[in-house]
Amino acid sequence: MISDLLPHFQSVGSNLYSRNMLSMHGGNLSMKSGDKVCITRSGSKLGYLSASDLILTGINSDDENTQLASSELAIHRAIYQKTPFAAVVHAHPIHATVMSGLMEKIVPLDEGGLLFIPEVPVVGFNVKPGPGKFAQEISDTLMQHAVVVVYRHGSFARGMTLEEAFVITELLEISCQMLYLEKTIKN
Ligand SMILES: [Zn+2]
Image (cartoon, rainbow, N blue to C red; front, side, top):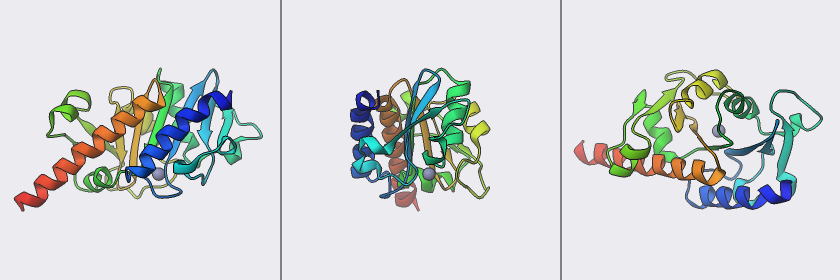
């Protein structure tokens, strides 16, 4: 089964890395499969994933693989427990992360952003971020919004596929780059 999922993880991971939305060991990806979650291994390089970087473990219970999973597993699990979505992309897009330190709600200026992500909440505003933190707030917010940004940390986007969640992440980063440029030019 992991071999069927691997090409999706590789394609999205390398796109995120090449588009400057991740550091070498940053971010994590997952897909739901029945009552299991397939998630990237703790410390894996998303730009260069192989089959051994994908960890299959329970959504609702731990097993022998759980400790190998990304440190953000609790957030991915909460999203699958609470929402109907089947894929999650967590990235560290630079402009979106900068904007999350400045405003509690990101509202895009551009048409594409306004159409698909008209309002992006910032979770944990003014609170020190940490791995696995804010699982309930993030999963609650993703019931109504396609993507959220954790304060000065990064984005969590959901979709029915990894590719869909990637497109949302990219839209967010493009919108935030435009917001950043506008703010810079105005000042
Ligand atoms: Zn992160």
